[in-house]
Length: 163
Image (cartoon, rainbow, N blue to C red; front, side, top):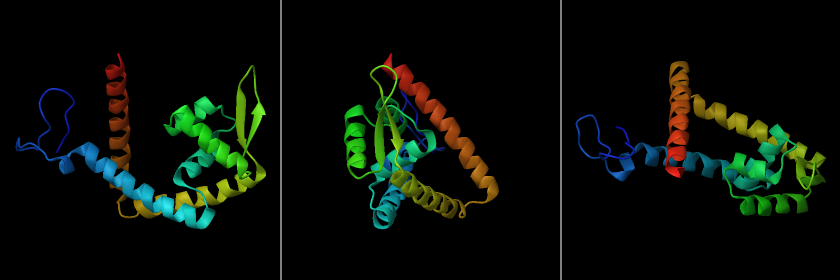
C-alpha cells in the first residue's frame, strides 16, 4: 500500500485503488489520534492538563526559554492558539513570561510548571515504552527509519506546495 502525491491515485501492489481507510496518511493519522486521545485522558486525570497544555509544558521543559513564535512553530500551532494556551498556563502558575531582547518575551516554566513537567515526561516515557513493547527491536528500528523518511518527504512536499 502506498499513497502517491500528484499524478496517479494511490494503489496497492496489485494496482487496485485504495479506499481512504487504506491510505497511509489516513492510517498514520488514525493511529496518532488514538495514541493522543489515550494520552489526553491520562494527563487530564493525573495532572489536570489538556493534551495541548501537556505539549506546551513539555516543549518548555525541554527547550526553555522560548519565544511565543518559536513555541508555536515547535508545537505546530498558530500563534493565536499558542498565545491562548500560554495565557491559561500562566494563569494556573505553570508558565512565566520574562522580557527578552528587544520586544521579545521569553517563556519558561515556573517551579510548579517544572514539577508538573517532571511528572508528565515520566508518564509520557512510560507510555512510549508501553507502545514500543509490541514491536521487536528490529521493528522499532524499521519504524524509526520509516518515520524519519516519511517526515523528510512530507516536509519537502510541503515546501514544494508553498512555492
